[in-house]
Image (cartoon, rainbow, N blue to C red):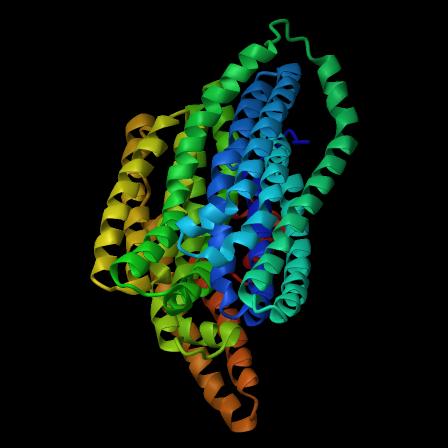
Length: 548
């Protein structure tokens, strides 16, 4: 499925665009979902946190591990061994997925109690079968990524999110009504909201299976042309899979588990140290998990998408011994990540108040909500950069280093988080501890990449100029919002319009200002622009307006 001129930035951009769309859909449907759930949003997010923990353990390492092995085999023309990798990984996925799903379902009550959010139990039981589905889906997505195509993953993610959005809102509404009559609106509405995750995963799996069935004829033709004499046995491939999956699993789990453990630490300290009830502290956790984390993870998803493309691409360069191209790919992936993450973080921080007001209204904790969002710039840049550097280390076969670095950062994170919580910093302490975690990983990863590849990070066009552009962009977008907000207040009595129209104008102004400044400062060359989807057309337009 990959062309001869396969370019990892094009593939990464495709997946990044899909990531943006899915996050936009996610933010849009969470608005009515939040309104339906009310206080039940805490039960919903806690159930999802626990689900995410077991998703990390069971399947999130599979796409990366499978893509890594398939890419290495395809780089040397071993198509039959790539096919065997798919079959072997599928057996492992079925075994792991089934075991984890059953365990989570059976122990849902105890897990919810451990997090001090017992109302999340029913929602967790509904999420349990999705763990099995995601294991199978992860293997198929990893297989296509290893072949060099991100399109099946990208389209399936969009399809998954659309189904998720529709079913989540509908399920939450119907279950809220069902629970209202028996005094269990929180438990039932949260459970209804999680139905969308299960339905979306099932829909995505069906789509990817369909794509595989269509592609199988072409792949079988490639296998018949494969003249590889040294076919690997399933036993040998199984060993390779386990050896590859284990460090990826450890790295992915340790890196992502901090946000999941945050809720457990927060709930236990609020309950056992300060004596608060779930009803007292859950509203604060709602603004952190339902608002702050929802918005800040949207731009971070772009770095995650690019990471999925960069690993198999780096593996191919390492396999064929092209280290000059390897360094170029590292530089391009880091640069693309930063020029997207920096303005996204700045924009969320500068326009925190209008974003929160537009999306979630002015609740009782509005000022806390806005102040928390001001920290977005730090967490978005930190996690985006640490995510891409993790993948770079995995792509150059330094699998243990992300594990070690994430473990060091996690230890420091948990210690700082517990200390901040004991000082009654509430959810602000959680956000600060998250930022310190990502910064620690960034520092350790950057030093390791330089040590093992000789790559020297370019600073000016990768960090300084994008940051200067983003600061100017932030000021311009804030002025655009303020001016239009005052104008709309004079001509419209609708509170929604006085916020929505200025926010839209501010976002448009931000995109134009930042894009123009990147061209003025020559952050991106014509060659780099042409590496993106429709890059040639974009370059042509920029030349006509003399920005390139």
